[in-house]
Length: 86
Image (cartoon, rainbow, N blue to C red; front, side, top):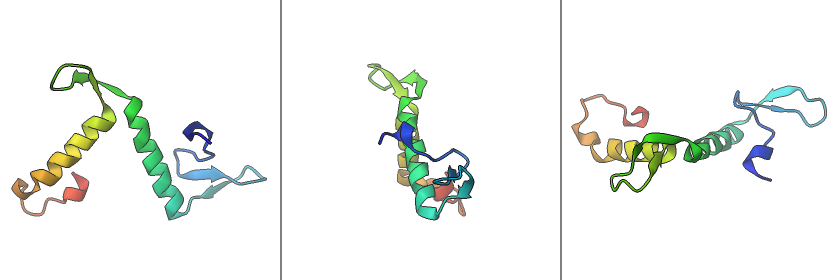
């Protein structure tokens, strides 16, 4: 089953098995949904190119680099900065 076949919606709800009614997702389903949505960022191309100029960067790469920089340079952030939200 591919990602496009998942019965979940972006609102954190999914269709019930027989009735088609929407029910709240449990935490594990929500976490999987988040990871699947983050995976879709690989297909979103940004205007910027890689440092070597070989191709355009995708949004997943951009997000990963920003998260990495937040961890590496977190010691220089103002006191009280929540690096989990950067």
